[in-house]
Image (cartoon, rainbow, N blue to C red):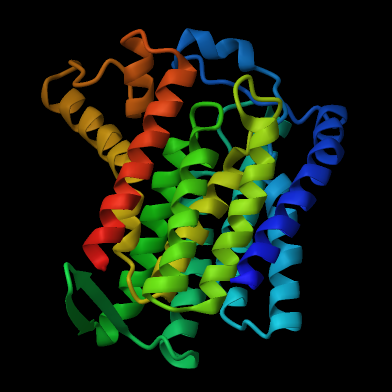
Length: 323
């Protein structure tokens, strides 16, 4: 347990140090957010807020993960770090193009998906052929345990999970502190699960380190945010969450604990589908669903706290389901 505590504290301290370094630098480089004009009008005041702030928690997680590998010989942190940094780099390219163009559009959708696909494929191939994870996924449900060997379907399944999860987390990054806080709660859940229910020292230490880094980042990202994580952060978080669950051989832990991310994605899919079927009518006032609550009159902070509470409840329920 002391390794997880050290990882959390060191990554937190590094994030607290990184914030005052990166934020002025991002301002000096004029890396400001371009807010969508089709979003809530109250968000237009956020135009120009520094973005690419995901570097504030990615820098500590890289440093701490390398230390965990060399000092504590926790080999499983590196494959998860590979996905985290790989997805974060794709997000950085997307953010950078947006900043240069002063536009809300970055990489073309197929460019982004191809890059994420390549990283996902590398991770999936490593798990199946070069690690002790193999091609099995496991299930724990109220004391009942089961396993399913996916064989040749394992790599496509892992790729799908990674792409779906990272895009789900990306959609959740729409309110100050929402994505970072929700991810912190899920990573704390993963830490406890990897320590006490599905023992895996690497996943436990990595998740604890991510908790510390996100906690430090939220000092600068809570309402009113001084910096946004951008796709640099949200894609990295989605990849890290999915990779952690997959490495535990329980990929659907993400669905239970991260149900908020799933609902955010479904709200967009339902909105688009309903709009097309009804020739212009809307199911929600605005999607993703956090904007729907804003349009109902809830303040940004109230929506964020509600969604944090919902995520915490999902983690508690999921923990008792898998015991």
